Image 1: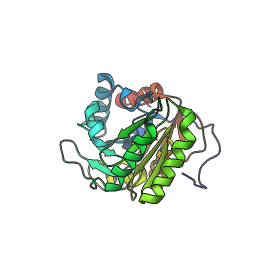
Image 2: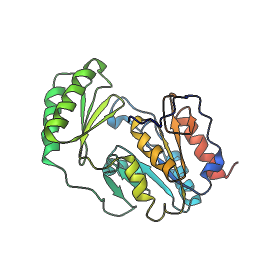
Image 3: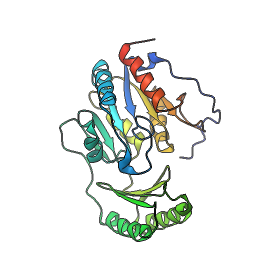
Length: 254
């Protein structure tokens, strides 16, 4: 995200727990609630995290949503089915126990996936992640292929009229028309999030849209991890600090 509003000051303060009082809380997943793994399926979600989020959701009268680049199907497989979810960078939305609101998978995504598979063949550490309505090309295990992966993804995006979503050691191709910010804006118009003050916690550049909309709606963002230019107003060092902060919200600590 390129935005002149990005703060160049990396020394952001930690968020006060009182921000969680009355919040409509939006949480990224990878790198925020769980450490980033070497492979997409290498992430583990422990029972303690699910219990913590459940208690915090109840304390917030349901105003807790997970907003992720992951598909909703994957988030539900991880155990988040009882939470409000926005998946695939806002293209998918789902309430607990309800069908997923999402566009159909485009033929262009299948074509891009085939091209990614051809590229990944014989390249140890390069992985293709098939999602419900998008596809990702991961090179965390083989960073030497990053430039070529980016060139391929950009070429496919242009030829197939798809949105290119860079991530951490990842390029994803998906339909356009949504991002994490649009997910925040949409959910803030609906129960149970309506009426709360938006607070978005995330680590990646893809979370900047969420920070921006939260701020535009009178809330704020919390950046997790390495300091960088950001629209967030606060920061937490790592996943463990996020959990500690959320636990303070459950306890009602000021």
